[in-house]
Image (cartoon, rainbow, N blue to C red; front, side):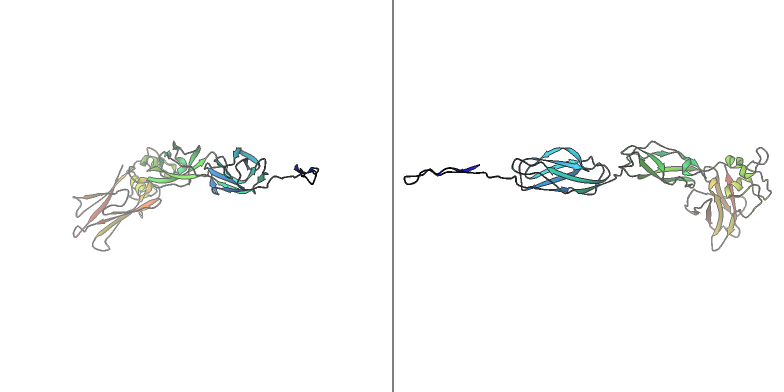
Length: 328
């Protein structure tokens, strides 16, 4: 209430005081909202900043996520209030902030901003290990054990239907977090050893048609084609089907001799030891042990179910003898 009065003087008497009601309304404020970055990653910290204009030193700001309070009110300082949070789950969040106001300033609410939170990618500090399998089996037959991700989860082969070749090779593994809502899958790799099949296992397979103790021995030749069972095993033949086309071939397209044959993937070492022996007569032989992969004069072309083996032999004079020796 504002009062005006006149005390009067020698010529005038005092005036009757006059009162007037003066109403002073709170000043308006505006609040704006910003984020340290969107999209963010689940588990990562996001800083929300509310700026109030004009710059005011008092009052608090309450932040909201989809109309649910985020923490406690934050005191305004130099016109700003900040909230750092890592509690936002994966998805889209409608973030708002409301300024409480003070004795002389009205409160205000910021327009909503959208904070997008993407799934996080877990790390795999310790990959699992895999058990060995037998050639012809798929990765589904190998058991994964151990291993750990940065979060709880499980490991599985990325392509469980893959049937790898004999040997040890890296195979893809997928890590699936238990919390799939906030974490995406991650990948790693493990070494899987594929062992060759032993001759005895091959001979005992009913698909070969052999009879135990009767015609299943490595030197037996039940189909009478001149190719023993052990050679049938090594060359990918069928012991009960006469076929000499699987036998090695010797050619001389140039100055060197080429000895070639198809080696069944089942018979790769340690299932058998395969040796190519050559010489100028049938007495002295020079051995060449066939390795798993190409080396020296031996060229291996990988394939399935057989690898192609090509041995380049030097000319040994007017005549050359070459033979393939297979042993267990």
